[in-house]
Length: 471
Image (tube, rainbow, N blue to C red; front, side, top):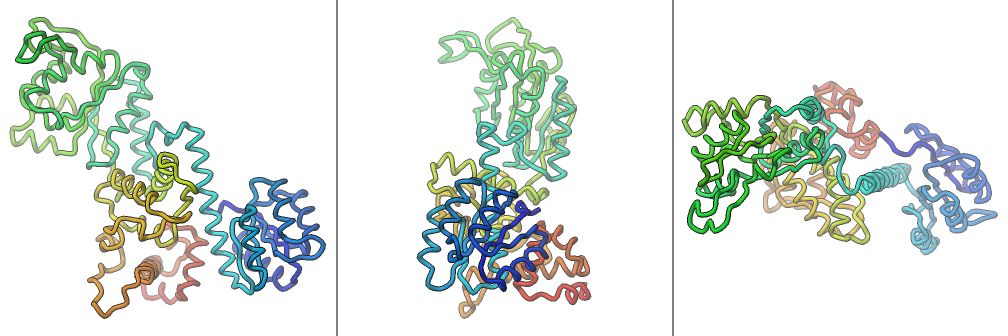
């Protein structure tokens, strides 16, 4: 959905005003055109506009003067200047004074549309930055970010389960965000003011896991010079999150079962039990049912843990969230890495790569890719070369309509930019065939806006109706 709705065109050439009004109105923008700088400033004051397309040289008041006055009176305005050959220095001066970009005359209407698309992407990132900063730098919903139906289902489950103390087993692949779900369950529960304690069961040696979880008495074993409280005691009244619970050794499984059944723990070396009030949330990427079949995990403990199961979907099942997450990480790493000037968005080619990659490492892999990209980006946009090589060297996922490339021959054109354009064009053609030329449905399949699809169809010279007939 376009962020900009209203555009003011200021140019003393009637032909320019006519063409821009015709093209931009056809794309759904509310467009008004004026012939000089004074009239432009009056119109800006009379109505609110999102964008000003302003010629550098105009009668009565030149474009630079209009730019400075317009930005002073309307700080949120996006200004794009238009300059003929010979006024290039003035155009650069305008950018330095706050204009978003400039377009050199004579230009094709598609150039203006492309600049507007980039400006909208920049505005979208700026709004996301402001929103995240206003939330203290945290993504909404206790760190969980997603608008896809699989993630909405997870959020609905969390809402239903948070008020009770039922044990929950959180499953999903590595890097999907299982701990974030556990933290959301705690944060939205009556226990929110009490401790949330997380432990990775697979990261603690088998000989120490019982002491870590349940504590130990002084002298219980060599080097136990003092008594120690376990993590269950530390989480008393709150929530204990047992990550990778499938890695627990058998003795610890027995003790954990007793906690879940009786609500009490027995520290190592102690003869007395202690009552604890702890909600247990467990997570695993292993199939506990199969571990039970192999005798590696207690069946009774499995059923105690798996009262309710929340499955966190892998990123490949929620492709619509990829760019949303990428923008959130972009905002975060701009702050954390003190990036100046900040990286404000992605090139269309980079967006295509992010959306088509399968993300076997899930959200964690995307997070690492964004940190790398912010570090390597040289301008305001992340380009394909700023992303990890595996993104642009790997074939598309098996469900994608385009065939996997076999790799170029030594004599082939090795232009990465052209390869990305070819891949994008093949996806658009395949989507049009799949939807029998329905551009609206094809845009939904490709997960881009209808306007962006129309622009790319024109850019690549695709006959959408002909592609639909082949479907």
